Amino acid sequence: MIGSGRPDALLRKGLKLSHLRLLAALAETGQLTQAAGMIGISQPAASRLVAEIEGIIAAPVHERTGRGLGLTAEGRALAARAQRVRLELDDAARDLTEIAMGGVGQVRIGAVTGPAMDRVLPALQSERLNHPNVSVEVVVQPSDLLCEQLLAGRLDFAVGRLPEGLRAEPLTFRPIAPEPIALIARRGHPLFARPRLRAIEALAYDWVMPGADSLLTRTVLTRLQTLGLPRPMQRLATSSFLLTLAMIQQSDAIAAMAQASALQISNGEAAVVAILPLDLGIEVEPFGLITRERVSLTPASQRLADMILKG
Image (cartoon, rainbow, N blue to C red):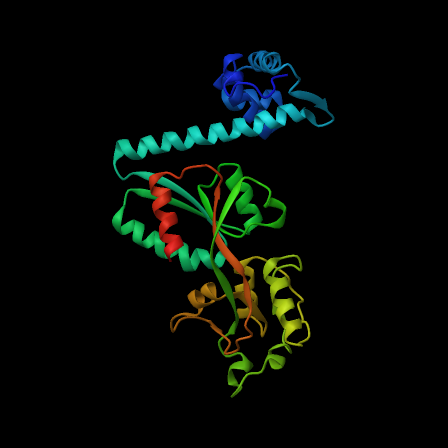
């Protein structure tokens, strides 16, 4: 096996880009035939590449499992690097396209709901005015799913939080700000008629929040406990924004959500929901800009990331 020798030992032994492409595909598919199809070669050609790789590193890179093909420890280590090389080459191609076409680019952003409204949307509005030929895709999901997509190269950067299980991954987190939480209800809700709304009065109604394991719900319950208040009733647990909105429109339920999102949907005379005049001091831990370590953003991505950081 190649040990800690020259930095270019693998290249001197004959490791090629085709080997890396196959390893990256194997890590993603777990099937040699599917990996071969992904990179546009035949299955026998893929088998030859695997044999060449094993000859170069003097160790097996795959083994048969009950579910198909599994990578060995050596295979996983090399495949992880191969995936990073592939992502870097993909980004390099996008850089060259932006340079060649002047101001044209594609940016893929992930964000949790509140920052998507509060940070990403204003940045996109500015970008459209100054660089109309740049197209942007925005994915709004929980932080754990965003980080998984970021690691897979499907996002340029994300605006969210680093989940505990992914803090050892090659990701960089730059904190931006904590996220205040507001309580919303339908306009005409009985609580809006109270001259001075108290927390205990709001707790008499059903609260709509995500599941018990979600960061929002844990933050709300911890804050209520700190204030010496009981847990709210929660007969519906959902992370769906649309289902939450429908529920509070059609009942006297209350929803806890990011203040930025609450301001967006309660703004204007036509809005059917409003923010309750009750500040419980609930703040979710700071969100931030998440990128892959040692990966340079394309010019268009970097421009948007800088705007989001500045706010």
